Length: 301
Image (cartoon, rainbow, N blue to C red; front, side):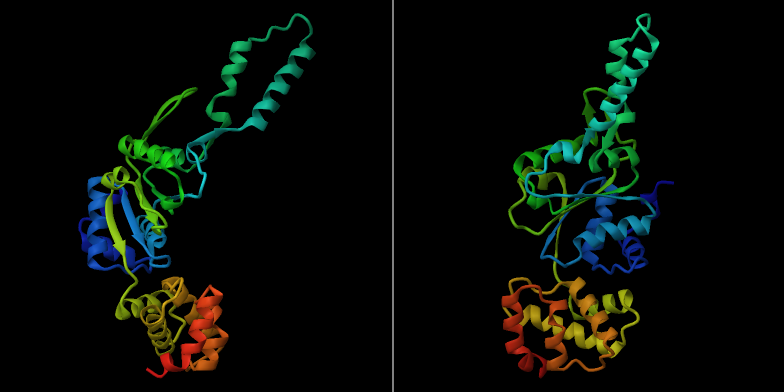
């Protein structure tokens, strides 16, 4: 049985994710289940901290399969995602062949063609994330922050995701026996091209509502008291909705804040305590200054 066969419904997927501590809504569970069943990549967009990367991690953990992560950045190219040759080891191999030939004397014969062929075998191949995913599938391939890459890299991804195979001139074609589960994430710093979007199933992840974020804190930070967790979640929700922040705190910041206050022995979050620990949840100076000026009013709600 394949790992994806363990999941027979959207509710079943939600339950599998919940077993890892990842709590999703019905819409995300449904689109995730369809991505598994239709063998289509899943493109997740949303604000930072809404749980896009965490979903891929939870899928791998819940299904018991490896997670292969490709972190995108400006200037990334196909070789950094696909494969490269281990040049230092190739040079050492050539030197070893040369040394052996010298010790053998003038009568030693070296098959130069064979030596060259030996340089381009799997022994010297450095598999990058995309190639690893094709070789190791079933697995989860996480293409994180695809919006940071350029157009050429998107075109490369589109080609790979259309066929789940790549060609290595020296070795031939590598084809996945089973398509990996592919999750792409985007913070929407730029628009992902329509051609790539058409290849994927799509979901926009919002910040969770109050009740679901409370449930996430209870699940992921059980050491935090119910009362403290509720205070932190309500405060975080107010910061997202009533202040114009450069980067509103995400779920990860909510969890970090709750754990930090727990470590300090906090029972009631007052203005002074919130101000002293604000750097756990707010990561821009302008945001911190704005929040400090409003803490008294926000906490009195």
